[in-house]
Amino acid sequence: MIGEIRVYGASDDLIEVEGLCTLESSGTWDVSDIPVLVNGVPVLTINYDGEWTITPLTPLEGLSLHVTRSVGDSGNHGLHPDISSYSDYATITGDIRSVEVPGDTWTAS
Image (tube, rainbow, N blue to C red; front, side, top):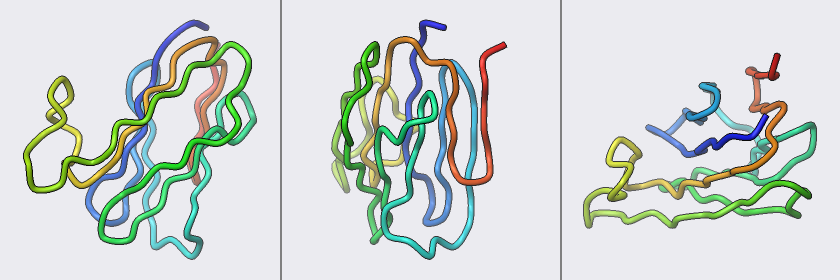
């Protein structure tokens, strides 16, 4: 299914996915790099250390991944003011058939 999702961190314990699907993953993270999978393959990791940082991994064929860095105290993310200023956010576009974060999964029907 061709579409777009945005992945970002909120508060100090919540990973959110919105767009083509809506997912939430919350918890006390025991690992520093939490994987986000698209079509069964890790495409990025997200880490909280006072700010949410996103590290892109090897991109998949048919997907585009762009990371916008956090803007800190300077305000909001422009087109996406609902995203915390203390979080990077990733925009993934393309043939998205499934998305998985710890504890939550979406699959196209």
